[in-house]
Image (cartoon, rainbow, N blue to C red; front, side, top):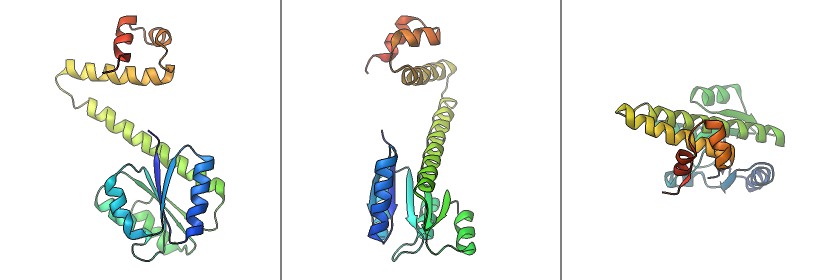
Length: 184
């Protein structure tokens, strides 16, 4: 499943620019809106990893969106971009947990680098949560089975589903690897 971005800006040309950069230079999907009041509804539908939002907009501004995300304890990271950057707004955004704060005009490479960093962070958070869930499984035998399934899923990703390579790299029997690859 591709990681997804929601971009929010009241300036249509900025949304088009962000959409073009993300679409052409990254593997991520992007949805844009110029109406910040749509953001809570779009986020409730789920599926976003990152929000790129302008700081100053009618309706909800970037800090309002960030505040809403943090109050609801949502998983999305937030990058604020602004042409009206100030030390005060940067400090407020950072104290509220913004992933990054970028001033306009920005370089295309800066957005790409920051987005990639945020998406890698999201993957790490999901992975840590997944591993944490394994450690909550009881009894031990069930936890071992869950761990084995997760191990084999990741091994299959690394080996491109190549069974002989999985057997060789894991030291598991061919029957165990074949059983792990069977569709449920």
